[in-house]
Length: 125
Image 1 (cartoon, helix red, strand yellow):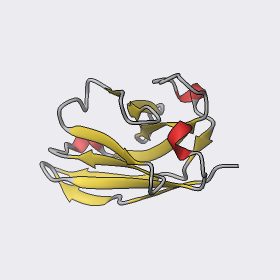
Image 2 (image 1 turned 60 degrees about the horizontal axis):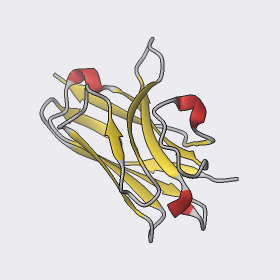
Image 3 (image 1 turned 90 degrees about the horizontal axis):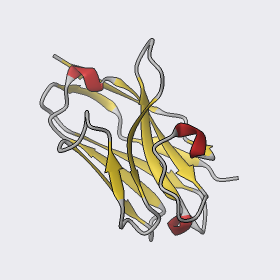
């Protein structure tokens, strides 16, 4: 069983930045595609971004493209989400997720086997 622990959420003003981290408890972290999803109150969970096991492929939702950057440090078993130019509509609980399927990079939440507990990001106007 893989455990994912997010950190770095908080309250920030519009236009500000935050960096989320997600630490994984697995020795085979580099084989996992890692994704970030978010869920705002009253809305369904939505895809934000994902990165392949070795970090060679990344994909972003249109709503965050150019503002958010996903990265990973396989030596530290950690994936990051750098969020810049934050907007009030970015307010949500952000979840880290891991997909053990080798060679597949998915934007669909059902593809991910493991999930963190979530971290709240609140952007004030």
